Length: 86
Image (cartoon, rainbow, N blue to C red):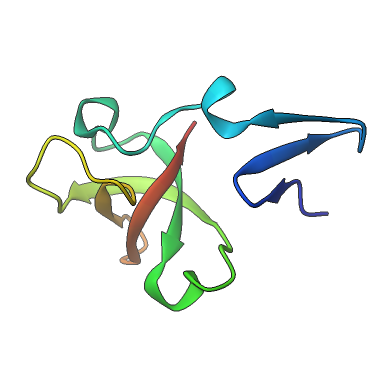
């Protein structure tokens, strides 16, 4: 079951709430540390917005913010931009 659509979470199909109301901001480097669980969007999935869950191994973005999410490498080796910090 897919709960996230177009940056919104559907809750019981009645009320929609913004991702920013539930999760820390994946656009700020200060919110992301190695070892934390995140959901990222891989380059190949940018069109669909499909999220991949994992644990941060390395932070690849050097700037303090990025409008599309901080780029990280997961422990699995996958690289993408953070959408949700769990």
